[in-house]
Image (cartoon, rainbow over all chains, first blue to last red; front, side, top):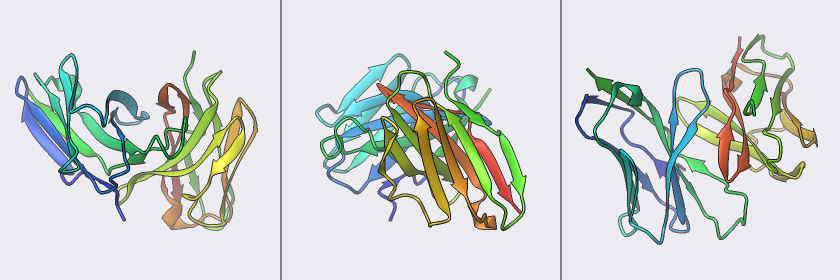
Amino acid sequence: DQQVKQNSPSLSVQEGRISILNCDYTNSMFDYFLWYKKYPAEGPTFLISISSIKDKNEDGRFTVFLNKSAKHLSLHIVPSQPGDSAVYFCAASDRKAIQGAQKLVFGQGTRLTINP
Amino acid sequence: DAGVIQSPRHEVTEMGQEVTLRCKPISGHDYLFWYRQTMMRGLELLIYFNNNVPIDDSGMPEDRFSAKMPNASFSTLKIQPSEPRDSAVYFCASRGGTQYFGPGTRLTVL
């Protein structure tokens, strides 16, 4: 069973516009959520995170929104740039269950393409 | 720091052969994770270590898979015997604050 789901395998956005990547989760015990970005032939790199006590976290052009009642989070990129073209993974963790380990459950990823 | 180092970067082998993947974590990180990435299932956690001790191996798919961490600077993931369905990209990550991933090993089993 997929506890973290990214239902859009790919997304294409015009440069300068907003990119919105979505993620749904099923485990209500998850209390920490992360987004990772992955370029071809490289490992994923951490982008931004949010704790369940917040509903929004912003870092420059990147903002993550969390809707706990809907078990849904989204990543907004504004404005989108060609260098943002990559695969984006959503991940979740139950920090209370395993202190310190940050055992992450990942989604399948969404390939974002920014068109000039 | 050079980051998490994995070797080899690519491995092509025949079904039934033993495969060993290697990982050097970032110095000072006390957690090490092994993941597998496939198109169907995305990134799956296979096993993780804390201070060289395996803590959770519930993600290891079968007994054919084994992992060791003999010291703080080295870990291996072994598949014996390998099968075509093991073909995937295998990532190692170490944790200091958040998880830092290596570049991965692309394994192809023919």
